[in-house]
Image (cartoon, rainbow, N blue to C red; front, side, top):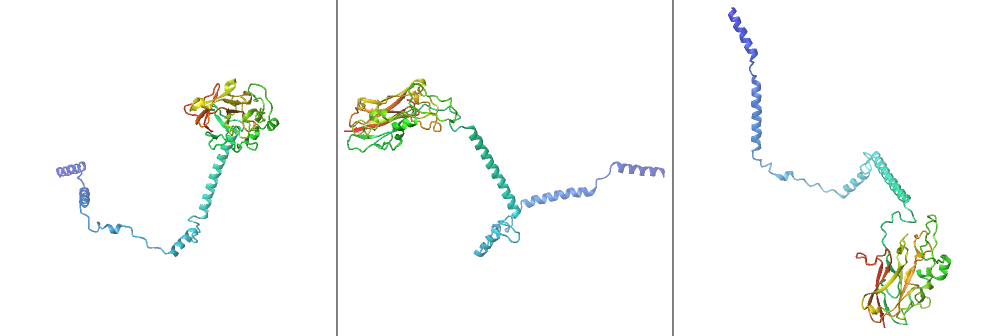
Length: 343
C-alpha cells in the first residue's frame, strides 16, 4: 500500500510542476488565423455588379421650389416666430455681436485718436521737424506771357498784340509799390535777415521788393512787357525753401545763355533790378509766420534776340552750395525754355 501511495504522490507533484496547456487557447489562436485569412480573401474578391453602378451614388437634384415657397423661406429667415430668431440669430446672440463690434470700433477710434494726438503734439505748424533732406533750390519762371507752355513761350513781334495777362489784378499785384510800402519794411543791409530770436509763433517781417525796380520789365510803362517790340522779358524766381540760406553768405547770381542754337542769336541781355538775389530776403520762415513775404525776382530782357530764329535758352543759378548741373534733375538750379521772335 505504501509504494502505491508514493507513486500517486509523485504523479501529483509532476502535474503541478508541468501543467498542460488549455485547449480553448489553441482554438482561439486558430480562430484568429481563420478570420485573417477570410479578410484577405474578401479583399481579392471581384466587386458585384451592384457595386459598380455609380448612378445610385450621384446626388439627386432637389425639386424645384415655387416662388411662394421661396418667399416663405425668406420670411422665415428674417423672422422665425417659432424660435424667436431674427436672421438666424436670437436676441442674445445679436446683443453679444453688437457689443463686441461696438467695443472693437471704440478701441480702434481711441487708438487712431491717440496716434493723431501724438503726431500733432510732436510736430510744429511753423517748421518741419526733420529738415535733413532739403535739396538746393531750383529756378523757375515767375510769370510768362503770350504762351500756353510755361517753358516754351513762342513770341511774335507785332505791335497789335493784346496786353500781357500780367496785371495788377493778378498775383503780381502784391509787388505794387503801394502794397510793398504798406506791408513790408525797407531793408538796406547786405546780409541775411535773421529773426530767430523771436517767439516761434511771432510774425516775421519781410523786406520790400517793389515792382518799379524791374524797370522796363515791370509792365508799368509797357503793358506788353517788351513782347510787342520783339524784346521780351522773362521773370525768374528762386524756389522757396524754409530756413534755407543760399550762397553761404554770398549773393547768388543768375546767368543765361543759349543751350541749343547759334550762341549769337540771343543778343544782348539786360537784368532788372540786377542779376543777383540779395541775401536780405533770406531765410524764408514759411507762410504761417512770413505772411507778407514777397520772393525776389530777377527780370531778364532779351534786347537783341535775332528774329525768326528758334533757340533754346537756359538760365542758371550760380553760388556756393548751388547745384545747376545735376544728371538726375535737369531743372535743379536752372530753367530751360524755347524762344522764337517772329519778324
